[in-house]
Image 1 (cartoon, rainbow, N blue to C red):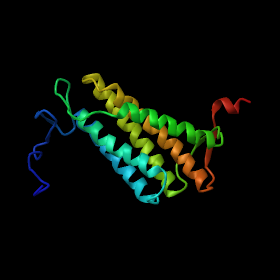
Image 2 (cartoon, one colour):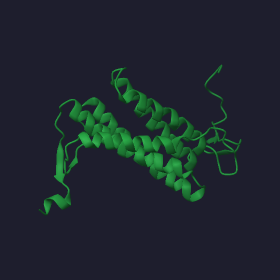
Image 3 (cartoon, helix red, strand yellow):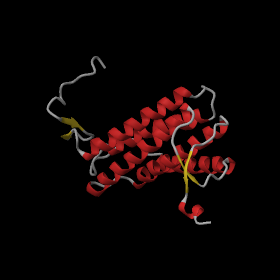
Length: 188
């Protein structure tokens, strides 16, 4: 790449896969912007973890798959995308990782305030960005079908980041800040 700027977007449009140009605030672009932001937040998390941390490989795999997911989101139906989706398999892996971590976590029974360690706080931020990306993907899905693997994958990511944030607090022996007990716990 000789230069970053192309000037083709100076009038408020951008290109998508297949050659079509759409408004920069098109829901497809908005959804991809949220996924891009999520990928950047995951990069921050990885930068805060030691290079040999067990989570590095998982987070790296998620980042790589998010790039593939973004290419699919940028592809309207009727246009072939050559990048194979691995989101289904990665969704299952996320579930297995969550099950493993959850088995080690103490049941908290409370709504928790995001924060704690820098890694935990960034994982909570990743959780919220994943939720926003999911909302934008569902809006797009109502206009132009989004592969179900993608919808499930992004939904699972927000859950994974929540569990990882809690696990990080436990790994660092840092107390979680409780807001209030779940309603079903308060009735007892």
